[in-house]
Length: 484
Image (cartoon, rainbow, N blue to C red; front, side):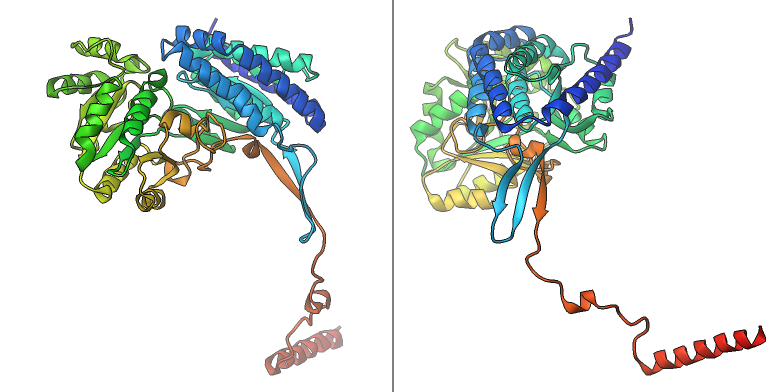
C-alpha cells in the first residue's frame, strides 16, 4: 500500500481521536490533571534507561547513559518544575486592577520531535501539553519512530490508569512528509511544537497556525583571561562530548582570550581534547559538510574515534572530542557551522572586545537568537556579553548542553529552546507549560466612563458653516414638500 496515503489517513485519525479526548480532558480539575501528569512522569522516569538505549540503537546517535540523563530531565525534572503551576480555572487575581486570569487550553497540540533527542523531547512535550489540559499527537523523525512511539505509548497507558481518557497522548507510526503536513494542517489542530532542523521549523511556521519552532544553535563559548581555566576546560570538553554533541545548545566553537589560550589548550588536552593538525582539519571539512554546506548526516552524534576513522586518520582512544584550529567565520569555513557531533572549532582573540566580535560572527552564521556561553570572573565582561549578544540564553560558567536545558542553571527545564525574533521564533524562552495555554481575563470596571462618552453628541458641530448648511438643507426640504 502507498505509504504516503497510509500516513495521511493515520494523521487524520489521530487528530480526530485527540480532539474527542481533549473535549473530555478540557473539563478536568486541577487535582485530576496533576494526578495524571505525575503518573506519566513517574512512568517515563522509570523507563529512562530502557528508552535511552532504544533511542541509541534505533538512531545510532550518542551515548545511552547520556540519553538516560536527558530522559530523566524530560520526565521527572520537567515535572518538578511545573507541578505547582495552576492550569485550571482562575490562575491569578489582581485585586487592585480587579482582573481575574483564567487558564484555557489550546486544544490539540502537534509535536514534531527530532532524531537527536527523540524520547526526552517527547516526554517534555507530553507533560507540558497535558498539564495545560491539551491533547497531543507526536510526529517523530523517521529514524526514531520506534523509540518515540514506545515513549508515547507508556505515558498514555500511565495516564489512562490515573483516570485520563483514551487518545489523550498519541504518536504517528507511519511517517512521511505528506502525513506530517496533513497532521499540522488538520482543522482540529490548534498549536504546533517543532523541535528539530531548520526545514522542519520552517514547515511548522508555514501552515498558518500558532507554532513554537526552534532553529539551529551555532553556540560560541568565550573563555576570558579572568576565567577559572581548570573548570572551563573540564566543562567545555565534557559538554561537547555529552551524548556526542546532539543537543542544539552544545558548544560549537571556543573563542579563547589570547593570553590564556595556550594554558586552556593544555588543560583541555588533559580532559580528552585532541587538537587536529592542518591536514586532519581539512579532512574533517570534507567529511562533515557537503559542497552546499549541509551536514553529512552519517557523522551526526558519533564518537571522536569514529569520525577520525571516517575522515581517514586515527586518534588516541582517550580522545573525547576533536578540536580544529580556525581563523575564518562564514561560508568560506565549513567548520564554523553548527556541528552536531564531537568536533569543536577553536579561535584565539586578544581581549574580550575581539572575543565578543568573533562570537557575534559565529552566532550570525547559523545561530541567531539561540545561545552564548562565557567563562569569566570579571562581571563587567560577563554583563557586556549579556547585553550585546543577539541570543536569548547567555550561560555563565556552566556546560552549554546542560545549562541551556535548565539542568545546571535556573532556566526552566525544557527540550525546546526558543530563539526569538532573531532566530525566526515567536519567543526566546525555554518552552514550558506556560506557553501551552491561553489566558482569559475577567475584568471589572475600575474607572467610570467620562460624561462625554455617555451623552448623545450633536449631529453637526455648532459652527457658523454648520448653521448655514442646516438652513440650506431645511430650505431644500421645504421646497420639496411644497412641490408635492
